[in-house]
Amino acid sequence: ADADVQLFAFAEVDVADIAREVHDIFSYNAEEREQKLQIDVPAHAVITGDAQRLRQLLVILTDNAQKYAGEGVIVTLRVVQNERQTLIAVSDTGQGVSDEDKRHLFDRFYRVDKARSRSTGGHGLGLAIAKWVTDGHHGTIVVEDTIPHGTTFKIILPNKQKGIK
Ligand code: ATP
Image (cartoon, rainbow, N blue to C red):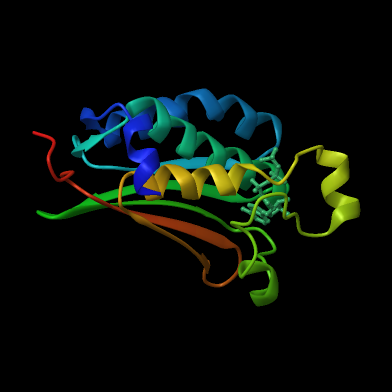
């Protein structure tokens, strides 16, 4: 992953702004699918990051939540920042993912339920890219259950990158 770091264009970016942008772009889909798309972010959450890649990361997770969680669900984009790090979470109230599938979700080309997945036409690359972007920021990405049901992806990123002002 470290060799890839030079592929990232680091600058001061406001993750709250990016989340608001992605929320606005995906609101239209939510209406069409009778879903709710909620956002819970502070006024600002500035980190050293690659704005374009971070937008891509949030687009992948929001798109997945809307595609796979089904009708009537609530999708929530959340950003929480402390002095050291920033949490980005995308959660849905869909049917969830089995523990066995959770172990493979970030692998390239992995898809749950091939028959259902084929009708939505992906390649199983989105989450591998999401992990690559996270690794490039020296962060961590995990998948958890939403209580009482659904899927939550959590990304924790350091606010600052070593060697970059
Ligand atoms: P691509 O992103 O290449 O178009 P994809 O969406 O299948 O295809 P990933 O984003 O890597 O690829 O997702 C892998 C699999 O994880 C999906 O096929 C889907 O089965 C499952 N998945 C991802 N997000 C969710 C979610 N929010 N709820 C339920 N299942 C999910």
